[in-house]
Length: 163
Image (cartoon, rainbow, N blue to C red; front, side, top):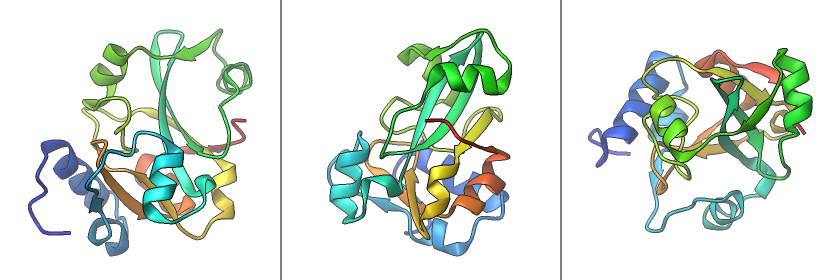
């Protein structure tokens, strides 16, 4: 990747990865793709990887507070299970406005990092099965390679069974 990403959100992600001690592989491997990849399936197809290797960054409303769940693209988050896990009454899919307010990013391009303030984050244990994981880079066209351990470190996330 060159040193001056085209979009402010991509630069925020790069800065957050560097600040979080991400390996050069994550920053140097960041790709801005010609087409938007707003689903795990489209990202996996564009990258030539398994859908399970895509770390979907999903923002939920957990009793009014944002919760970021980084989940394998191979399955869906069980919101009841997650609510019990984190000790809240209810976890629901957040609105587009809620997501943007919490992350500064839009649905389909939400990255694990680069937000205005740290978010409580759960990282799906299913991602641990892969040596390489791909996550969104702050816009729907950007992705970067990472690992389960690195996602935990750069996000301050908690490993969890979320499906």
